[in-house]
Length: 212
Image 1 (cartoon, rainbow, N blue to C red):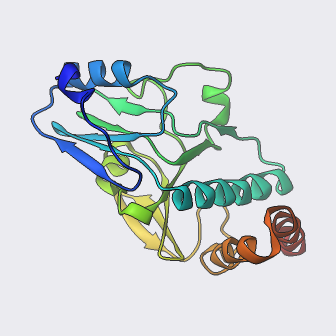
Image 2 (cartoon, rainbow, N blue to C red):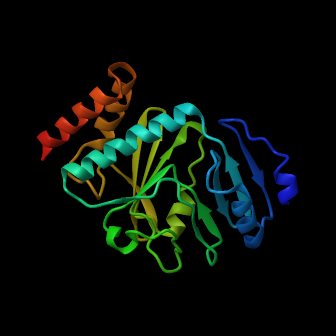
């Protein structure tokens, strides 16, 4: 399968699906693809998806991640960012690479670790997905027990909070309950296009300070 996989080219914004992929094959494909790559993967019960993001996808990911970091900094909450780390659980036959993720409540449990194993380590407290290409797999995040999943799609922010093992869409984040983020973050994402990144980040930081 690895030889065949090397023959594939996945254009930005496109994806390929491979069926009947065993866990061993999944691990071999991850090793073959390496860590320094543009493609993202998702694995669910033997089906492997490989997708390459669009540039539009990447800049929105960075901007929204910056907003999360500003919120955590201004609230003086320690966090451990792990970007698009591969999270997987062999027993559940699940694997995913978020666009970005943060350990917040469980920051101390993973601080300084180079490798994580979800059989023993907690999942990230917050995962972020940009749905320019409709890639998000909430069922995988749900199975892995990620407490909160943010999806940014068509200019809107959707916040999903894990309750009794199922995601429930909510207006407010459980991590930042006092901030109307579903309304404000899309506004500031759009502002980046006209005001530029630095001015927009300063404006968002000032807004956060006003709310505290």
